[in-house]
Length: 281
Image (cartoon, rainbow, N blue to C red):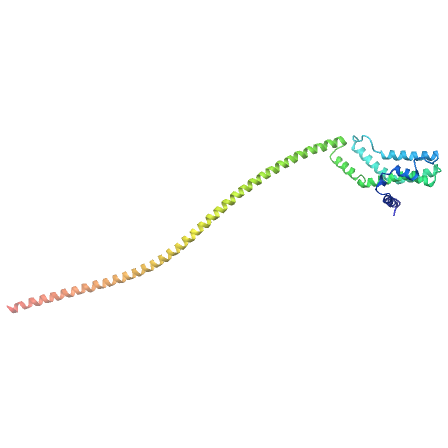
């Protein structure tokens, strides 16, 4: 485990012991542990404590001021510099510890009292920096600014405002499209209902026509059967008429032959009658 990891573990253990109010104690916690600033200390020690407190307050207000008009390149340098500043906290602690040990005669307890607020500030600063993804969000914003040719906060604000207006226009267009879509959908549903009703009506008419067609088909089949019966009867009548015609023709021939025979008998009788007349004379 590295030294920084050990310090983080010790800091987390200290926070658990101090409770929820430990993060806001600051110099108040120092007062509770060692009394008021400068109580019972030599003037030299008081100067060191005051210098440490000023350093802490100065670092706490780092970055204040109007920095909205800096260029993108300067902003990038500031973000990188702040990340380096946060990362140099441990080295700052070591340098302060070494300087206090070298140039003062403070006791170990006083040195710890002096360094504790700085150590708390450094650890809290590193923790907050990690909670903010170590400047990742700023780098993403700056990358987007670079891709869109935006150099400072004013241009970014103008671009966002323009994007907001475009978004509102897009929202209005989307709402208009939604209304048109709803109108078209309602119109389509209405036409679909009308077509469905027409289809149901046509289906009912088709069913009626099918019933009529079935009745006509049945009647047709009956007519076909009747025609077949009549055709058979006609053929039978035709055959019978033919036979009768033949019988009539045969009867006519026999009648003519009988007439001829009668005529011959009459001529024979007439001849016989003529033959008897001379003998009687």
